[in-house]
Image (tube, rainbow, N blue to C red; front, side, top):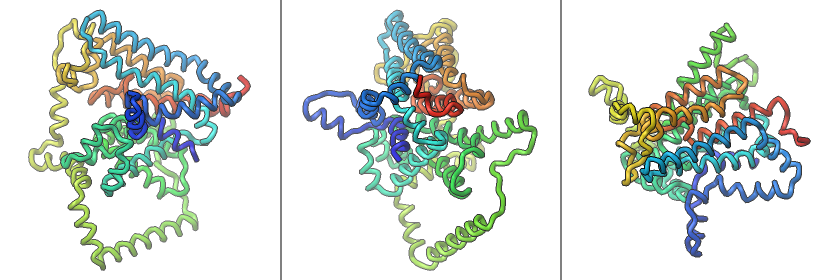
Length: 439
């Protein structure tokens, strides 16, 4: 039962504001980034490693894996290279290096907890999906209930707390994670892609729960950002491509066989739906629900955010909004010297993006040039290299490349790298049993 909680804390790395506040009151200044749901896992798992010889051996067997060593070495090199580049150019902008540091600690924490996750879960992919379903549920409850939103603010970063009070987009900051908006949307896109890809392998008690989970994941992703829907569309594309190239047969999202139990389930759900609809329409409940929706600023901001593309299409004939139009201007010509060597600049003094662009490829090349960008690509590929299904690894890489056009993802998105680490370890060991305890 603790496995979902552990994985939730690890993947989303949400802040533990009460703990940080406690230390500040006793005069101990600790950066909030060090007091997160992920770093707090070090306390129990380091203790387990210390007292449990078998678990210590499993962690050791994982950390000496050639690919894990390569990933750790790659991240250390990226951190050192970014720092050296800044020193050589004399820009004093270490923001890119600082952004990479949490990923290194996240890798070590992942190595500590993953043997436990693998031992406690028969399907790690399904567990990841369930964890993101919980995140979607948190977002939904935060939108519906201001009291729930206020109570859970102790687990949100300060920027999200401020944005959640914004009447024009507060719904987008209702997630509990180290990142909100684009960063969380990218993570949802990845999970949605994996859910579609492994649809047949992932089992739930019945098909309706399975579709409900998918709908909730799409909802949760849209709350964070419309970019997340790319994961669903690209997932269907890759599944169809996989069937066309490898299976040479018709693609079906699910296999449905009629049984007495399924018929009873369908009838029960339809009957329940009709009864609820009758109660709502025949009482004043429908009016109360309508009033509640109209007065709920979070729901209204979400509705405005989602419908913006369609409203713009009706008004201008273009299926775009200010965000997509602005992104087009984020890519502009640069000098050959900058393209090759970069400017060693990632943020301005006022913490805005260098040259005021948030396009992923632009920001990466502006900082480290084409060689720095290729280093990030090499590092990203290490997470996908040993996945046995080639079309899956290629599909994941292409998806990340597409998402990187909007914002920095390749080699830098912490939640994405954490999910991929979990996926890699699961894929590596599922055919060998739980990490060989005998070494």
